[in-house]
Image (tube, rainbow, N blue to C red):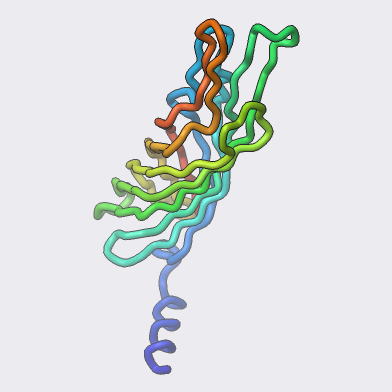
Length: 187
């Protein structure tokens, strides 16, 4: 009981600049398309990713980050009379272990972990889920009230979520490699 009380007092006495839990928002842009297409199929390139994030700061520069990121992916089929746009809502849920190198105002960090992705609203869907390995790195700027963390993040998905091979060399499938530029703003 004494150990628990001591631990709670240490957490309560932690200054705001070194708080244990940060929450905020993460957003960014993809640096590559999510779809590979040929023939009458064409990728629909959507230019943003956005969602909430939370980060648990641990001793020795370690941390755990969890995000819930939304993005649109899809393709169009020009052989259809209406243009045939097939969009999907893609939700990814990365959980990352993060290491922040020592520093004062700016700290370089690396992170790696696991991500789960769920897709909805697209026709010709082989699977609506996939999982993948995530790794990245960036710089965290500790300002008085907020922390800003730009980063480059790479995800390698384990499977294609859609894969269409039509006649005449018309193909479309999701790419397994995803690269994004993201900026996190936490409080």
